[in-house]
Image 1 (cartoon, one colour):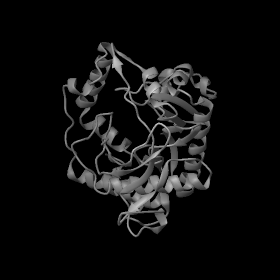
Image 2 (spheres, one colour):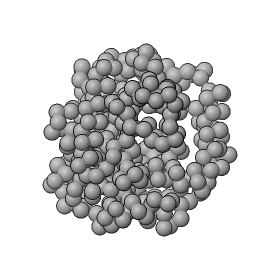
Image 3 (cartoon, rainbow, N blue to C red):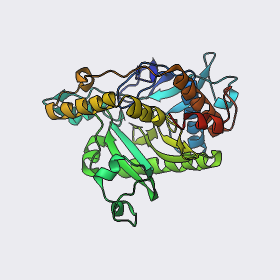
Image 4 (tube, rainbow, N blue to C red):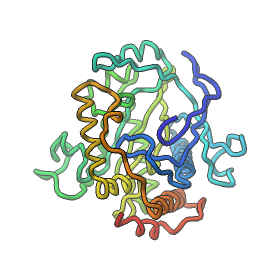
Length: 339
């Protein structure tokens, strides 16, 4: 189980062969790496499953290799268009995920790859960015000119990049950290970083094009990949409102809405999370959440309802089909603008 979806194994992967399994999407959500938050958002799991499946099928049409096998309805694996209602299960290929040893404040990636062989989940997240919002960590890690922008300082508003930027970060460490290309190359194992970057840009292109047709701005996102016998495939789930950042008419249509709500209404929890993470980095203690002094509060019922409408309306608009009984996207966006 992860903070947002459950994982079922039907056929275990081996050192040489991919296995088979399912993602079962829940209505849980997570922000600030907290894990499961106090509330559930109705129909969120179905909207993410549906949107992820739609994007995987788009990638297949565009010859981008993925681990997607279909969605599950009444126990049968189908294409999305064969379903009569929004699915909540996705059939996928499975690869090996060895343990990542952690001793004396360091992660042992050599041990990970020794156990992985030629069939493993690459322990990286490949991040792509089309914009640089205010507060983005990229602003702390570089100057505008580093990314092809003709300005001396970062402005007080979001900036569109002339070309997408691809970065690499850790996946299985307790706290994500951005990596130099040399560090990422070591962690990737047998996989060529240029291939990972190529896949990330291909996924970004497909999602951005689809978003534009549906009236969205696709701001940033990430992919995870598996390596099997010389082939790299896109794994996990791609292009959902949890995995990527989308906006509609200048308003975020993603769990960024919840992040901003907690920053405004319960800033002491957001600050406590930040402090606990910083302390964990200093001490080398991976379980930062156990040392966080504040717990997140429940969301008010009307906000949970507004979020549910946002996920459902956004998915309907993105896939251009009314899978959910939800308001128009314009109305759902208007309702969350001032949260």
